[in-house]
Image 1 (cartoon, rainbow, N blue to C red):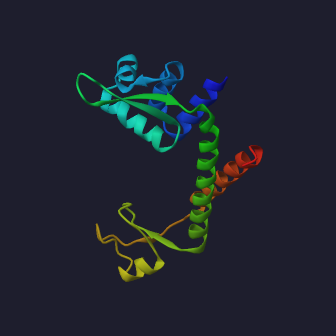
Image 2: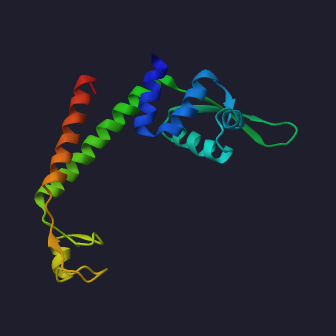
Image 3: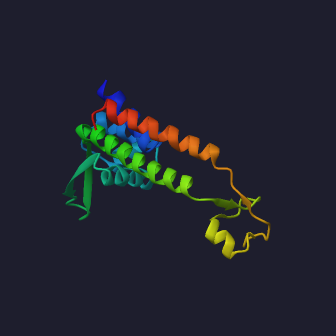
Length: 168
């Protein structure tokens, strides 16, 4: 059950490819990027990129050992399974703040958009450009933000519900 939750969190936060790396490390703690690459069929550089992203989020850690023959360091990676829930809650909290800020901006401003979707300006920027798109020269129209605002409100509600249910 723990692995399933870790994989769900990984897929939502980072993506399916990362979940494959996480699943391998869950079963094979202390694996090198070469081991992971060989086992799941990703290039070593792709695996390293995923490992660095997981490390940046504090979801994995490593032990570094020097290869006596070649003289370079090898890294042996392991999951930090207890960190997944905390990191996930923090990401949800951060998303909630971003959604709230964006909703406030959307509700308190009028935006103009090019009919060809080249540019989107607030009222002052549109006024400065004489309501003309600087890319294609088309006359800009006032944007209907109703759907965008509905989506932001729904995202806020979902994140608030998650945080309340998980005591975050």
